[in-house]
Length: 162
Image (tube, rainbow, N blue to C red):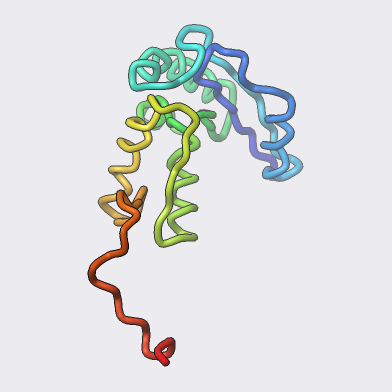
C-alpha cells in the first residue's frame, strides 16, 4: 500500500541535496511517494527560537497545502521540530519532525543519551526539548562536571564480586 509523505523544509536556505534525499529514501518502502515543499518566507536556517517563530507561518501554510494536495503524513525536516505541534493542531494528518521520533527511539535503546549539535546557540533549544522527556526519562544529557572519582563507590553486583 503506497503512502504519500510531504517532506517539508522549514528553511529558505539551499539545504536539501540529492544525497540527503537518497539517504532518506533508503529507509522508506519502495512504493512510498515523497515530495518536498520548502518555505519561501522565513529564515535560511533554524538556529534559535526566533528562527522557529519566523518559519512557523509558512510551515503552517505548506502543511495545510500538503493536506489539501493529498499527502497522508508530513515530515517537518528539522531536528528542532519547528511548528510541529502547531501543524498537528492545524491539519488532520500525522505530522512529525526530527527530534521527537529520534529521541523516543534513542531512549528505547539506552538508559541515558546525549545529543550533540553543530552550533552552540542551538543548545538551549535542544535543552528545552529535552526537558519534556526528562520528566519521563531521568537520564537525558546526564554528564559529569568533574573528572574526580566519586567519594562513595557503588557496590558490585554479587555475581561480579571476587
